[in-house]
Image (cartoon, rainbow, N blue to C red):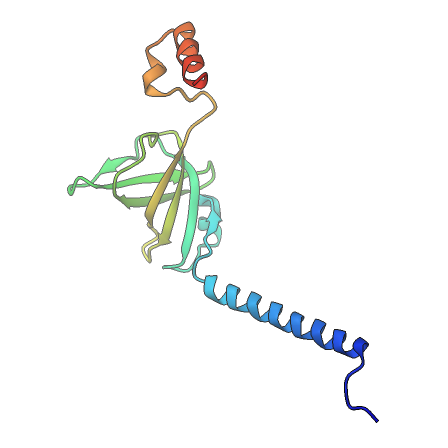
Length: 154
């Protein structure tokens, strides 16, 4: 009697071994990336169910009118982000994006501090569908179209 596995059993063993390896690789990837995930919150989400302090999250909303203040160090900015239902105070140290203005959309990556202030590590400013680059603002519509046509033709 032969002790070698039949081809049918060999394939079954290989399939099971491949599944074990794939599951192991997936678990390693999930474990390695567990601290990198960043959940998206709007101010009303933070007001109703705030994330634990120190957890990396992403906050999105509109910068409230009259809320942008540059602190004494000259590089730290504080402002308020709202979504129509709730507001969250935000503090960011660094150079703000050119499109960052009151009344515009913003997405901030950072963490919620114990005092309820969102401490942002990075800011992304969003613009509306009527965005016009500064270079084209003072031009007439015909001049702007000519410049756009010239730059896209290259």
